[in-house]
Structures are given as C-alpha cells and as structure tokens.
Length: 148
Ligand code: ZN
Image (cartoon, rainbow, N blue to C red):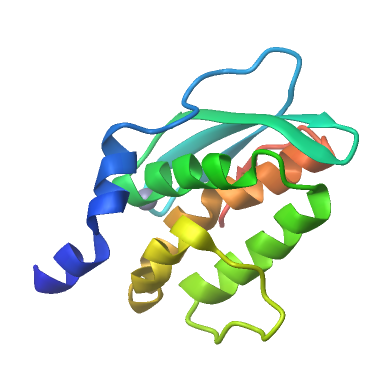
C-alpha cells in the first residue's frame, strides 16, 4: 500500500473529493471521453475567446486520479492559449509516462503531483483521459474519445 499512498498524494485526494470547475458549461464546445480499463468517464467543456481558453469545466465519474487530473487541468488551463494548452499536454504526457522534460518545457505547476503516475502504467490513461478529451473538444469533432 505504500506505493499507492505515495501516488495518491494529498492534492490528488483533495481534487478527487472536491473537484474544481465541476459543472456543465452552456454554449461551449464539449467532448466525452471514456477509459474502459478503469471505467472513468469524463465530459469536458471549453469556451474559447479567440485563441484563449475563456472558461473550462468538466463533469463525469471516475477514479481519484482521473477526477483530480481533470480538476487540476481546468484550473491550469483557464486563460491559456490553445498553443500553451497543447504544450502543457505534451509536457504532462511526458511527465506521466516517465520521459524527461524538455529544456524549453512550460512549468507544470500543480500538474507535477502526477509524476508518481509514471510508476503505474495502467494509471497513465486515468491521468491523461481529460486531456485527450479536451483536445477533441477544441477540435470540435464531437466524437467520444476512448483511451483504447
Ligand atoms: Zn481511473
């Protein structure tokens, strides 16, 4: 259990229990994601103002990792540009898959708490589900994203 306790750090537990920006958003682009390995479901809403994320929220049901990841993602991305969001996703993906960060990578801030996920490959999909879903919402193709 020690490893799991390390993984489920306090911030992850807090966001898992009390997710931020956890509601639907009217007149927003949205997409749904599903991680069949764990049963995580998420719907991400994003409202753009030109190239900037004006508002972002999510709904869904999943494990603590997927919920906390979506919650911290929405907190992190509000006010960021589309390009910054893409860059953060790449950096975050490298982090949770255990790849070294590139020199010019953006600061992940709170997203750093997911570094322990790299030791649990099955959890990588929990942590990245909301990000894949956000990408789909930004592209507006309306398809359900599956991690499989
Ligand atoms: Zn999960």
